[in-house]
Image (cartoon, rainbow over all chains, first blue to last red):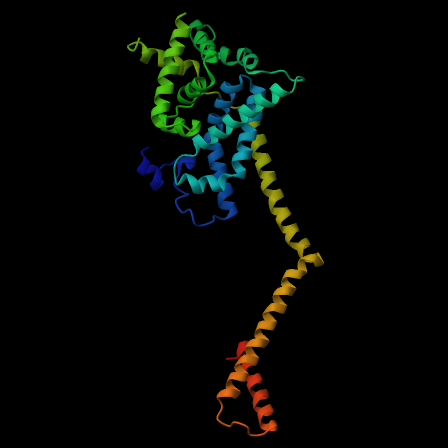
Length: 196
Length: 116
């Protein structure tokens, strides 16, 4: 979908709709709730996939997904107003990204629940079941875990969520050009790791 | 290396397949959002009612009433005085002036109250 289409709100995707093209008018609560419900249904899988690959287990991924949508609900009206019809998926993923960072930070502070990033990322998770018998895919997944955080995130967004460069740039708060370079370097580095 | 990239990207796409959320997560989330919406509506309604039961919240409406009333009286007096100054009668006696002032006050008050 190009920028003009996004602005005119011709997309059928509720999360990408142009319903927020009228920034000055306040929407009725019921309409906002209905639109949030559409957004939630359209992007639940994206947020969950991101959360899962980010934290590496279903339990935390569920918590993270829940917190992401609760936070998004609180700021939905403003996000719609400020997005001016652009897709809201990068905004959702950015919320999940910030919450995940908080999760790691909080756990690092509490010795009672010692889950640092490296522990979580090497923990076995059921994605390995998906790639059962495919040694190559398991090596790729293991390599993804060894990448620096920003490169790993960019690859998750691109390949697990199918986001384009512009969306990833918005989610990571970078320029389109920097994002393109980031993804290119991430793929190259991963190739190197897998070939080791 | 770059020729192998498309294959490698395919591999990466396969390895990072989207993960379906558990069904109970969707149900749980929907019910949480629903209850938040209901709680917000209930709270707002309750807040509006209880706010007017609290005498501390009467201060602002009362102050607005006093200020509005004061401004109205001042306006009536000002207009009445203006009329008496512009009338040609001059000093036609205290009684006549008082009657005229009373008539003017009545007229201006009716105007202000919307009886136009």
